[in-house]
Length: 368
Ligand SMILES: [Zn+2]
Image 1 (cartoon, rainbow, N blue to C red):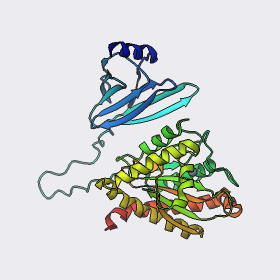
Image 2: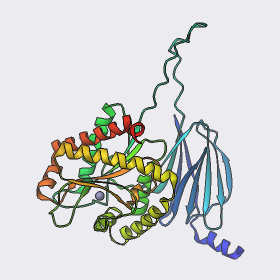
Image 3: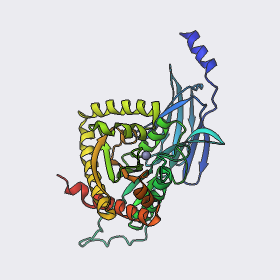
């Protein structure tokens, strides 16, 4: 065992880890990742747990002492290296994988807790009946995922999917922000999050965490023949309708990868049937999907193809209501041309915003 461990140490690239940056308002930890290294991130109360495979490093315990990060600890294990990043109370971590000219790296940014409100409001008068103002409602936070991007164009027909999904998503962000809703985008330009499709979809899915209110992934449909039109909306679950399977595989990355990710998601969907939280969340996802489907059909006059459940990788781990909407068929001559029209994109974005707003304002409380 000892010899084996020694060999692993020799074979795994030596790793200088992490690069630490202290900035105004946040602390940045950068983990450079060799080609074949994999990672997983989990949040356990005030500790970010990063599990790496394919790298090795000596044990270490480093006190950081920034306003956001107390310390980090490096713990080499049998087949994985675990790094525990201990946060200061209220600090908020965000992570993203980058893969560009500067190399492949996981960037963990830990932000300061929002500073307490300045004491500009006069203190309540002593005695008497204090009219304490109602606590300000927390702003709603929505995650918008423009499907595909970068090396992955998505469907290519009359239009290129990645361009339409981004255009609609950016417009949707504008509309939501104007209505006081905060928006987090999985991408803001023509880029992929990772060259590895599974990692790419997981990184998008990871943004659907419990600090956000809902997740909407925007896609453009195709049937390969240019004969279909209309709008479809999806929630996560087993792909009941077998005729949808080809499309699900396509959206899960296509080819062998798409098939593998679909199989994984199918078996997860099966196991979630007995997960009370997942079923509870699914109920709200279905409600959001219904609002979105109705609103889109009403605003565009497009054919209503219905709401389905399917084993879509990008929705599989959502802890908040999460849907994937196919806003139209990009390989249909007429509908494809519509999707390319900024005025039509605006109509689609407005319809999505209306449905999201309706869900956020009364969706949860109105549901039975
Ligand atoms: Zn797509």
